Amino acid sequence: MHLRLTEQQLATLLEMVSLAAEVASLNRKPGAEANYQGYEEFENTLLEKAKRMGFSDIIEFDEAEQRHNISMDYLTKSFVQECLDEMRNEIFWEELTLRLAERDILKQIGLPAWTALSEEQRRQRTEPIERRYWEEFTAKGIDNLHVVARFGAG
Image (tube, rainbow, N blue to C red; front, side, top):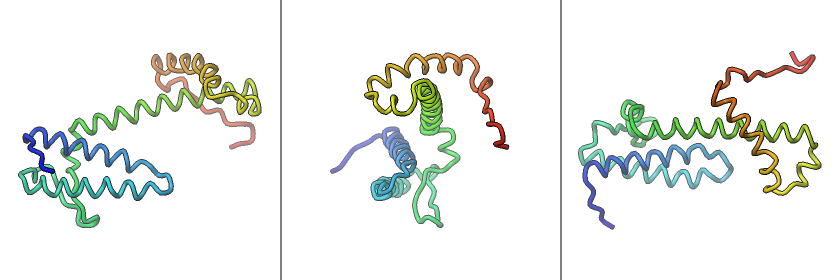
């Protein structure tokens, strides 16, 4: 297959592939390495060809890893970095509110009752609590979030 891309489209494709490879590298599940390796190989192939086509100012070769990368200087200023930062931020807040809400419900009803609930029933129970945490974190960030050590825990 042959694609005809403008220089800007190729730059966008390079960023997209690097973003996908970065996200794939976060998967630490057993067996994920094989799939990630395919992303990494495709990224390397694309970057190697793009470097020869005039993108050498943003693509560097890592001798230790024996692979091409988009330079950190370029990435830190790119849309890719903005996307990764936003994704990490959203995941953090969503996971925090969900886990706190689930913890609160577990304290109220106990583990046996929690495991007996369907996924839909769990969502119905946690959503109002998540919303309250979300409002708190939106207004105050983590300023009011504290870890209280149990007696004798240090």
